[in-house]
Length: 417
Image 1 (cartoon, rainbow, N blue to C red):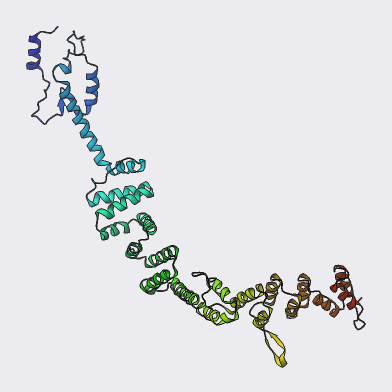
Image 2: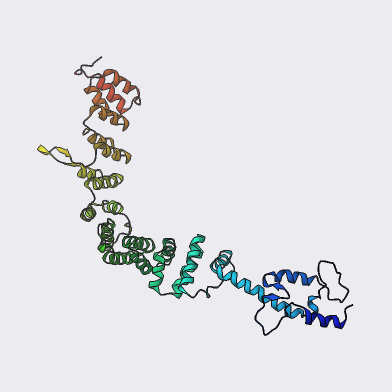
């Protein structure tokens, strides 16, 4: 048990510095540095407050228990302050990373501490490095709320990844003016016009509203673009919508679909001779080639079994009242369309004779079951063996069977064999 005199000698003879609440220098507290406070606290927790005798060795002098010379509450405050200072020094260095980690993990976070322009741009750069689109967008929206619009655009102009993410966000929200401003500032006027066009077409269902929007974007953006191929497309689109709206008002027919393709509109107009004028206007406005027009018209009239209209479309008057073929399609394409639409044999036979190559005509006649044409060609070639073989494939006692048999008996034919 120590005496009162020993305690008095300790305070007057010790070289260790004591704690003073008026002294800010806390670098050395009882011979222990600030960086060793964790070790100090661990040692305190194992120290007994009893006044039992202390073991001595030859290597060190006996020490008083820490809590016998300072209250536990005071010591706790000192150590808590030390830890808080270390925490502030760490978070001040990696604050953006800490914030982004909270965003990624879905933890509560605050961006209020980012007040300077440098801290905000550093936060955005850290978000871009993270590669997470949602995080990048959160930071961009924070910048738009706390900085001037021109300043935000200047920051984004130097960061393409951030621009792409923001443009995608603006597209979803249909904020066309913001998209145009940003891309135009970046020198991407064509991209701005194309992006706006895509959004308008995709999200506008009413034809009249679509027409107004297309006219506006054509005048404000596309006309100012030099050597832009899409400008003519927008102009044609406007003409098509104007034509569709006009025809629908005049015709009153619900079959025509507004905002449909040129060829679909042409098919609609080829359903009746009375619409031929409007179909001609449509073809001229949209550079529909004569071949395209004739193919569409032939398909429509053949599907309706309007064979007289087919003749008017494909034939014209020749010398001495004869019929002359006037087509822009290959004759084989014409025959395939007619055969596909179940044209009668007499119609097919009429156009088969316009196939110049005799062997090809024979092949097509057999394929399309035009037996008269096939038999006549074999008779013309005087190929008796081929005619007998062809006759064997015909239905016995049928019209074509008797026609082949009669051909074989023709006395005027000099058969090859």
